[in-house]
Amino acid sequence: MTNFATDALDIAGIDAFYGDSHVLHGVSFTLRPGRLLGLLGRNGAGKTTCMNTIMGFLKPKQGSISLFGEQVGGLAPDTIARKGICLVPQGRRMFRSLTVRENLMVAAQRARGPSGGPGWTMDRVFDLFPRLKERHAQVAGSLSGGEQQMLAIGRALMGNPRVLLMDEPSEGLAPQIVAEVGRIIAQLKAEGQSIVLVEQNIKLALELADDVAIINTGVVVHKGDAKAIKLDDAIVSQHLGVF
Amino acid sequence: MQWQFWIIQTLNSVAFGGLLFLLSSGFSLIFGLMRIPNLAHGAFFMLGAYFGYSLLARGGNFWLVALVAGLGVGLLGIALERFVLRQISGNEQGQVLVTLGVSFIIADICLLAWTGDPMPLPAPQALRRPLIIAGYAFPTYRLVVLVIALVAAVGLYFLMERTRIGAMIRAGVDDMEMARGVGIPVSRLFTLVFLLGSTLAGIGGVLGGPILNAYPGLDADMLPLALIVVILGGAGSLLGAFVGSFAVGFLYNFGIALAPDLAYFVLFLPMVLVLVFLPQGLFGRVQL
Image (cartoon, rainbow over all chains, first blue to last red; front, side):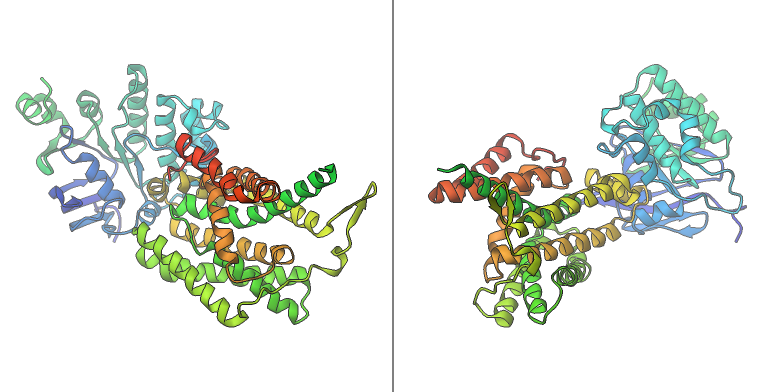
């Protein structure tokens, strides 16, 4: 099978639980190669749970997750990461006691796939984030919030993702930094990176996304084109709570 | 008291601190990465001493014996991690109890195989003569044990701070789930850390033999000391294990020499203070 016609990521009928609480109910959506899917919804809707389930942190009780046609649902997170799903996690979660350089080094995976462009290396990540290069020997725990977010993005890129999951990359950042993160995401998308973006910042998300899936209390309530949703005030106010 | 007393006690303390470092550096790495105290670690130390005794009795070269006995214990450590702990991964309480059970089993097997009598391990012939410096006699063997512990410390520092594998282990200590999430094969690191820690404990047992002897109960004497070292220094911190080992070495030796009735008090009081005021230990990052 060629990757040509396959979806980058296909989530079909996922059920997930935290202990006894049923968080995701038959969640389905697809990400096409080279596109950016905005996964939106209110606080507590289940977006981060979705990310954690795709990454393998949480095992789905039901449903399938496939990466370019290959089943990855239920695999261990490190296997999933090596197959090419890389996560920029909520709260950034850098390895605090490691230096910037070490954070990038431990996450490095070789570029994969037949089309494989130049592949991400530490030098390329440093080109993208000159700030990280300046601070390469500094311990990650001592970075500012914006720098930590850049490191979290750089670390995910070091895994040479076939699908990049970004969970609230703008959370808690100053407006200029949010704009910069937005530019970086747009640049990655322009280079053909397939991305799932979870965002509370609806404006930013709708600017960047090609497609949108909206989750409400663990159920996908709307799927569609980002431009159409942007113009549809009813959907925006009903499901996203922005007025 | 003569000042020679202080010199000899100091030397004994640092030599004992060196032994403790061999025991507790691995204990601390396992604790930091896997979040469980391997309560069989004292038994590994004792088993190293008994292995060493038997191999030396067959005329083995002391240093070769230390290495072989250490690796033997290391393989046992791998077996414990792979075939026992991995079967109940995620159940940390269960894992701790299993390691305690394994330590009892090892202790019973040792009693069966080597009887209840203390078994002295002879120090290498060349190191039995005291070293005379400025008219004072120093126990050569203890000095050599100290040097070996320092070499091990430098080697471990290099591994942990200067290699990719070391960075991966530290990443796992910082945030294990995220370490898996960036593709680090954490379960292979578990095996590696267990091999490393058990081997060091086994080597420590052989090196400690000429000072402590191999005897039933050696495991139960050493394990609490390793626990104190890790609580003082912080789980998963090599520097913590280093500082903690020598601190405990001094407290233990001087406690016994100066106030034998209070020896355990002197040992456990700092531990309690650290637990109350610095629950992560002096250099640790993992909340115990």
